[in-house]
Length: 50
Length: 542
Image (cartoon, rainbow over all chains, first blue to last red; front, side, top):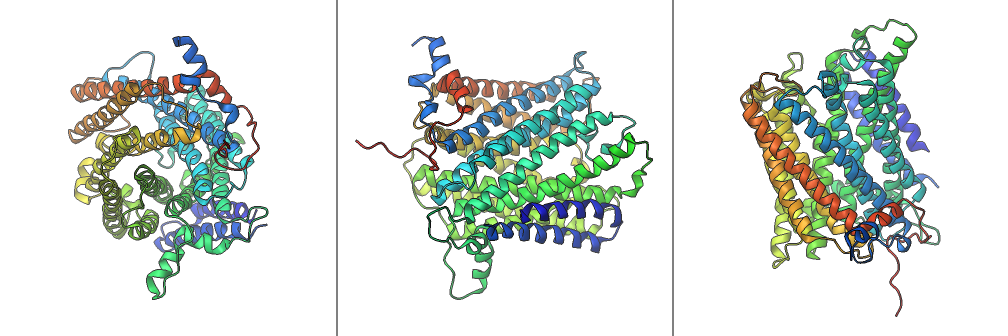
């Protein structure tokens, strides 16, 4: 279930980012990186589940 | 055998659904529903083609733009996702030689995606919900022009599709990594790393290479599935954002559209959407070509290590390529326009070119080959991407984009040739190849109809895309209705080619119905009698 929880957090973070990022290219780039790394981390947690 | 008898019972005994495994039934449930949604998208497309030739009273502007809103969603999610997911949920356990992790999750996926597509389609059909035809903020949240109820149907439908998509991705990765009952413990993390390409990446820097433990087809499916999941995260986030504005409107709260930066929304939205267009399509398509080439020839893939590496590069490229959609946006940084928009996009010519080369050489080295339906359609699919990818690279040039942006060229020469000829013909190749495996050897009703399907689809797809593209070069905008017949020559020709596509689909559907029989088709959706976890039934002992 960690996979789905991580997705849930990423979706909420994505929506929040839309309201706070403004025109900052740096923050925008960081958001993309966090979503990619976060999602792959989420998928890797599937391996740990019983 | 009489026509009615064949129609009801199928050709030469039709589809014996009672002998099918649960896995075969699930794969066919996805595929049959996906094919029907393709038919719906084709009819919608033809309705729009008619209006582009001449205005008709039955399809007014509101109706036209609501069709335009749901048409790509029905095509992408209702049809392509369904067919691809059905095939891959079958092929991952088939290639890994282990049972799928969960049949229940697989069943839930087709129900959610199929049901969600229908609810999303109702938003257009019942409530003429149409702001998404341009995608750009703040139009999707404009509830002065569009009813909130339509938006709610739309978001609920898309949400169900996304839940089904997450369940699919969970099931695929879990199937790769889990240890079935009674089996020796599987190296889950190693399987995960190899599936998504980490092992190959580390191997690049190591002298002593780690051997791959995941087959190339499964690696291709895994990398495409990463993009599927990332795309679902972005689309779900966009849906939640729209819900916030919808509930704000419903409860009378004034929510300023400028709270969200329009350019930022467009960047994030296109990043997510391009994970479908430039990510999973190209990765899944390349992976499917490799699977098809290996299964058709019965031989190993040519340059398989390069192919594996190219699939990883394609996945990374797909994360950084979105800016070619924002080349005409004044506010977009020039750095992103050149680096992401032009340079990274051009890399797709290399990765997709490699996939075409590897597939063709694999086929060439296995000559003589019989020109079967799957081989014909595979060659058609290769041709489609050989036309559509360069068309995409041409428009992803800052100079050419000035001329081509937002014209019929984009949606015709690039998108429709890529989807209808490249992607759909590849999927048809997979369907023709998997048909005997999924049905325990059901015999195709008519080879002549299959041949007609091929030629009508190929000529119709390339023709329609080309004539739309020619109109685009002459200045015809996309997402626009021309009422004075300004581009009628091209539009009539595109309409004729659209009719060929519709005829091709009719030939295919008729052939499938006559092959399976109505009883067989209905039987696919009844519970399986066998409770085996194998993909195909065990061979009968003599």
